Length: 410
Image (cartoon, rainbow, N blue to C red; front, side, top):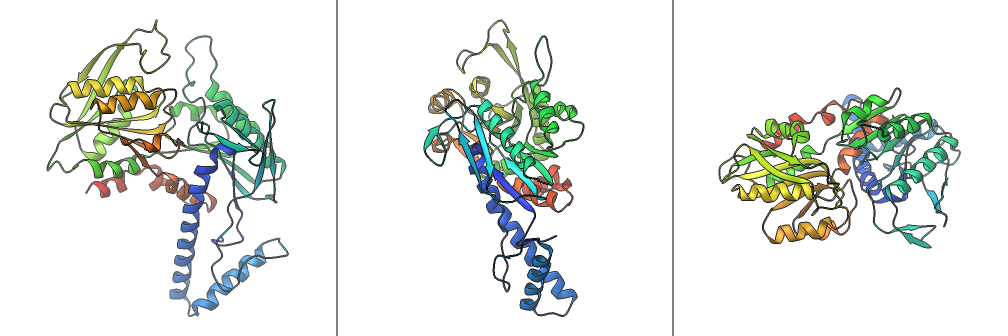
């Protein structure tokens, strides 16, 4: 179980997932160095050895285990693992993708990163071409990369997709496909062993797998950490009420209500389903009712993803009309598609909301410039999960984070 170079853990970042992969790798380096130091300190207490000699011995045994004839790095000091594996991504003008792995990954535990909602301008073909990729482009790029990794002889393949693509297409209501399940079967047939994602839209998607393990992470701790900077959660200077923006978000907000020990309210919306929503302004919501009381209180709403944002905009405006002093929303996966940022800027100028807390699981450069937006970092959570998975350690306290939330609130 080496915590230093050489290691069998390899990270490959697809074009859309480069930014998030780099952030996770920075945390992985810190985690591995911390674990190495703990290991050294533990052995020094147990056996009477000199620290310098022990570090040299650890490097010696690591070097013996590797199949490489030429070993990198100084033998006398800690050698940080080289997690990222170079890959060349080619985008052809007809829309096809090609991935070529530039170094040996045979027998390694490979983690493929992809952010399918990254619609920023990306440099492809060695910087020769600049283009924006759609969700389908990102998926195809990821599938080509999976196949390249499989052909290169990886021992295990894990997909790190903070946004599980097509997760909203998980229920069959008529003559339509179950696309979330379809993609799961494709991953499975290609040899993927595990998927790591963030706040998946529906837990039912996990039922479509027969062999893949799905690790569904939650950003609740990171969100509450930011919330403590905005609101007095002790109730000394202001009261807070948790508000479920719709019936589908009740369980999510019930978690925050129980964790923060605050009352739970709910917004009920009547919709006209003869209207197909095209943007945030042309919503099909006809009337809104509130089950609970927010008058003179801070209203906090949490949801998993935000697209055009029409539903949330109406909900926040409604809560201000009901007498809420502040309206704060938390979004795990902030897409902000179309002209959503422009509409939220207008709503913020009118005082309809105070802040929106999002995560860096979706890369959105324009969003980071907004005064009302707070970006919380979940890359450390993903790094901890990857490190524990690679070393076959328990994930329980990271997947169920109620204990650390309780400590944070106290």
